[in-house]
Image (cartoon, rainbow, N blue to C red):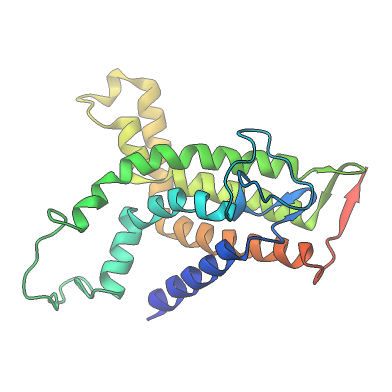
Length: 233
């Protein structure tokens, strides 16, 4: 029930945030739901440096499908929502409520196998969020640090940790090797990612909740409901 409520709450909030299409930039903070801003309706003086403005609708509608696809096909999230939403199975050693089990070999669950490709798409988004975190130190009146800066830095760190702890990343580092000892660099990478992988569940929840909290804070500041405290040098 907790899993159902938290995931549904995030879906409801994420949907509202995506269609809000406003108050997502409070200089120098850009909401992670709207990064990079590719829309022709980008507001508040934000100018995208990468691809220019060309999308006529909310930027979040163009951006969110990629990280969302990465999370929906994630091995941990599959276990979470298979058990909580579909009761398939409700828990270990508990019978499946469905009469017939076909696994992920048929439509629609066969599409879960695209997870490794969503991983390749998720890495650039983690890099973009890192760029936004660095940019959050660049205030109109000089270099500084604010509360929003902290939100964006923590968000970038959690997204990187969640992305790198992914099972697909672990396989990319050490998969298809007969002897890890013959590939010392990949072996070190595999061991590092394996340690992160043991915390994949914790990082999945922490990054999911924090990205929503970060968007909420930037919205409150941009809409004038909160005042961001910053120290500019």
